[in-house]
Image (cartoon, rainbow, N blue to C red; front, side):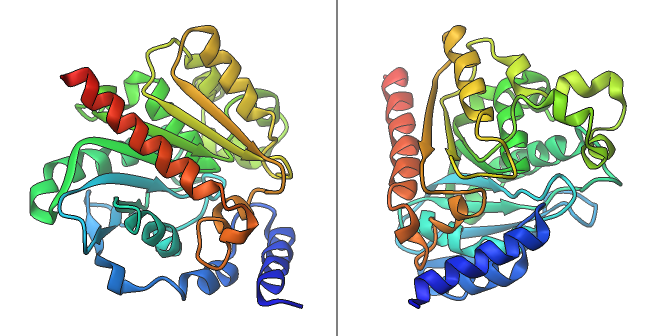
Amino acid sequence: MSLERNWLNVIARQSQKSLLRLRRAPLDLINTVASSKNFKLFKNLEYGALERQKLDLYIPRRVPRAPLVIFVHGGYWHGGSKDEYAFLAEALNLEGFAVATVNYRLAPGATFPTWIRDVGLALRWLRRHADQYHFEAEKVSLIGHSSGAHITSLLALDARHLEGVGLTRDVLNAVVCLSGPYDFFDFILTDAKTQAAFGDPLHWSDTQPVRFADGTNPPMLLMHGEKDTLVNPLNTPALEKALIAVGGDVKAVMFEKLDHFTMLGAFSKIGRWLEPGVLPTVTGFLRESSKMLGESRS
C-alpha cells in the first residue's frame, strides 16, 4: 500500500471514530511536512484578554506585505484549534498570502454568536497591527471549514456581526467556505449538541446563513465534497441558490471524490493528490476578487 493511500486510510479511520471533528493524529502527520523556511511564524498573539482569544500569524518570507487570509477552524462549535493548520497556512504562504489561524471561544461555555464576535475581534486586531507584522490588511479574505465556514458565511452575510466590533463588510475582499452548514434548521431541532451551541431557541433562526442572502455580500466561494457524511453537501447549493436569487456574488464548486476531511487534506503537500484542483480554485478566486477590487477603485 502506498504512503498516500495509507494516509488516506488513517484519515478515514479517524473520521469514523470522531464523527464530529478532525483528530490530531492525521493533522499532526500532514503538519510535519510544513517547513518554517517558507514562513515567519508568530505564535499565540492575543487579540483579546481571554484564554481562547489568540491567533497564529504566518508571514511568507519571500512576499513583502502579502495580502492577509484569516482561516477559521471547524470542530462542531465545540472543539478544534488554530495549531492544527500549519499545512494549510504554508500552502497559502507559498501562493503569496499571509495567513492568520484563529482560536475562538467554544461551546457549551460560549454560545452563538460569541464565536462569530471573536473572529470579528481577531479581524479588527489584525487590521490594526498590519504595519507591525508587514502584511496587507486593508481588505482581508476569510476561509472557514465546517463550523468555521458557518462562522465566515455569517460574517459575510449578516452585517450585524462586523458592525458589532466596529467594522463593516467592506473590509472583506472575499470569503471561502469549505464543507459548511448554511441551511440546517431542521437538524438543530433534533441535535442536542447543536442546541447547546446555539443557546436560546428564540435566536436559532439567526444562525441560518441562507436567511441573510440579500445580494450585498462580498464575493463568496462555496466548496463541498460530494462524499461528505458529516455536513450534508446539499447545504452548499442551498446557499448558492439563495444568493443567486438576490444577485449575490457567489461561486459554488462540488468535488466528487472528497469528503468532509479530505477537503482539508487536499491543501497539504502529501494530500494534494486527493484533488489537485482545491488549492488553485481557492487561490485563483482570492486573486480574482482582489483584481476586481482594484478595478473598482480605479
